[in-house]
Length: 69
Image (cartoon, rainbow, N blue to C red; front, side):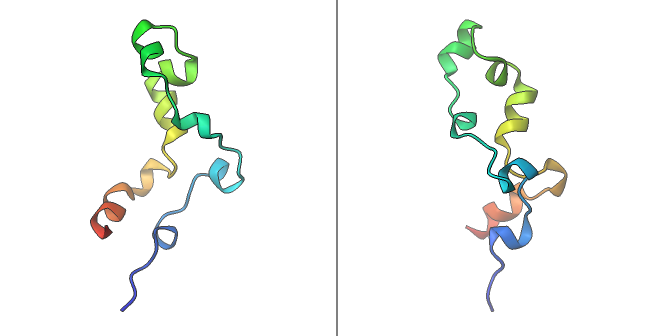
C-alpha cells in the first residue's frame, strides 16, 4: 500500500502554485518585530501567517502531514 504524498492530500495556495511567492516571505527579522519597526508583512500577525501558510487553513491539512512523518 502506497501512502498519498503531501500534494495528493493538500492543495497549495494560488500564489504558491503560480510561483509568485518570495523566499523573503519566510524570513522575518524578529528583532525588527520586537523593536516595532518591521515591515507590515511581519508586523501584522494576520498578514504574516496568511503569507507564510502555504495551504489554505480551511483544508485542515497541517495535522495530516505531521502524522505521516
